[in-house]
Length: 345
Ligand code: SF4
Image 1 (tube, protein in one colour):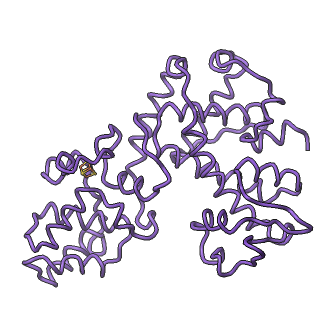
Image 2 (tube, protein in one colour):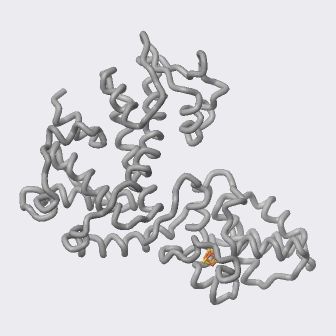
């Protein structure tokens, strides 16, 4: 495999710079030679936001530089949701490469890049239990520690027969690596000047795409991550206070969108003073789309304010004052991923 291809497939490897040269930012941002790389970077970010565009390139330099330009552009936003979307999107591209990687030397380099505590001995890949449980959480039942083979504090996999498992762990390690990597980048001043139109376009796309959710997207319900407005409604219910129709609607829509079961939603309402089981059930089924065709969405923060349900000025939760905090589900998403620290733009 030639070096250019390796670094186009694994652009996060530090040695890539030796192959593609130390290019100045000015050249990268303005030279005609790199216009395809700039387009590829934007394409990658758009794609990570769900755009259905296609961009075909086999040019290794374009792939390598496109990835690094995308990192720089994302660093400008300081937006944990954009970063997480991109990390997850790129993770899936890498997973294919990881699973098909035959070179032990390359698996070693990749693992070192992600700072994994690992070793390769005979025909096995050993990973410390600590790292394994850090990265197996999103991988489903068969990846539970209970089902893995262990040896002196390490989980181990056969390098030939269990390539898929190794690939999945590496892809999750990439997500963590990428988020940390972006936090360490200081976007250059010339970035906005040269990418102004792209950046404004991406801002619009982000606002349009980020408030779309699918039920169940959030996995297990994490009550600690509920936004202050939702916690306040639940507190009122638990205190036995009557809550407004809007509060009831917002709570049901929110709980449904984060994947809580109808039964559990109903249980929360059992403390409401005027609890009427049949009526509440009817409302819950209506809002969650089981009766009728519409699944109602949680209102945006601006609507919550109009309903007098936003409590950010009382709770002073700093996350609520970020200018990208436009939706209670964004709050929940960020808080659920406690390893993401919110940025400032
Ligand atoms: S800013 Fe949004 S998430 Fe925070 S309390 Fe207000 S409505 Fe809820």
